[in-house]
Amino acid sequence: MEEPKKLSTQEKALRINLSRAIYGSFAEVGGGQETAANFFKVGGASGTVAKTMSAYDMKFSDAIYGVCDRYVSEGRLISMIEHEYQLLPERLPHRISETRFFAFADTVEILNFERTNQGHGWMGLRFQLAPQGSYNDCIIHVKLQDNDQLQQQVSLGILGVNLIYACMFLKDAEEIMLSLLDGLTTRRAEIDMFRIEGRDFKNVDNRLMALKLVKNGLTKAAMFGADGRVVQPSEYLYKKNVLVLRGRFRPVTHVNVDMLLTSRRYFKNEPDVDKNKLITITELTLNDLSSEGSIDEKDFLYRADIICSLGQNVLISNYFEYYRLVNYLFKTTKGKKIGLVLGIYALQKIFDEKTYDNLNGGILECFSSLFGSNIKLYIYPALRSDKSLFTLKDFERELPENLKPLFRYLMVNNKMQDIEDANINNLQIISDNVLVMIKKGEAGWEKYVPHKVEEAIKEHGLFDYPVKKQKEVA
Image (cartoon, rainbow, N blue to C red; front, top):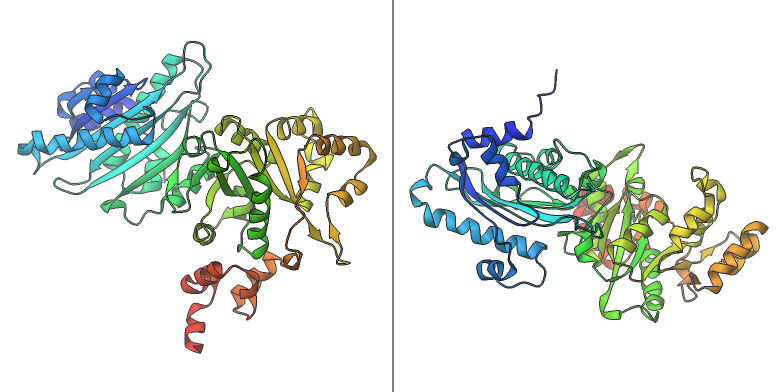
């Protein structure tokens, strides 16, 4: 069966214009002056457009939407769609019974004349799926990749039409998300935050949408906070000191918690770290989420529930190599100090020259990116088979001779540090073994995980924990 033909931007705009039931307002601030223009160009805009406006001057914008600190921000976007949407039924009471109202808004910073900034913006739609129905919100953040101002504006216009069309005619949240880049590619625009909510989308878990953004290639990284609410990484991490722990977290064990707590004690005492702007992140890569080439979404949500229950933020990324992750965080935090927590066996992989066979510059190309920025690695020890500790001192002795000078250089320049106060009593915990015990319902796994993790697993039957069987026994 052939897939239905995708409509062009013009065809989407015209279909909306010809629908008598869809009517609303457009408010576009900054560089995003293109969405409403698409509806005027195709004809029949009187069937769609109640009002268009652009409060380009900050004083005018403040007078309409209220004073704000940052004009290209989610907060400003929300105030725009709230203000514009409430005016529609207020001023058009005669249309309430037959009209699906919407308020579209964007606030955008496009490429400046010197090309020294990253074009980006917020775009959102408040909309009804039925006349007199409750409203829903769809909010996105976009990075503009074109190296030309006019092309960035064209991209915004296409994206805006796609957003309105998808929300008005598509019912599935993932389908809406995937249609946003119709007529575009990720070389032109990258969507790194997507949230849809309202009565008509009450069953949507936006954490899963964050995963699907990365999984489907709309962005390389997406994020949600400890409260489970999706956030835009560049806004959330702006000028923050970030401490990152990468892992599978299947499940979170005492070892994971100790890695974060001990490294945080070191990191917050670094002279260039502001304790008041320190954020810890647990990172899941697509590689760590996939099993036999596929991602189990249910399993992902199990892990998300547990990590959030411990008060941690979650970053989902497609940066398999550590140096790519560090590059991303360095740009996102605007050069602030970054801490990376690693088990010592992960460090072995970093120092394995075979890992970089695909790079022209080999290990030096990777290390220039990984250690060239404002970063420090905190290395968590391991327990050897003979029960001795494996630390950085042992690591250096076992390195090939040609890599020892490089290792010493990094140590002298304070780029790596042993975590000396690790809880060695927990080093025998292997998460895969704990997972097997949980799935089988075997007794004793509880002592290997934090109490909150135990509660979450038992209450919700996470990781296939046999809840019914346990209740029957009780």
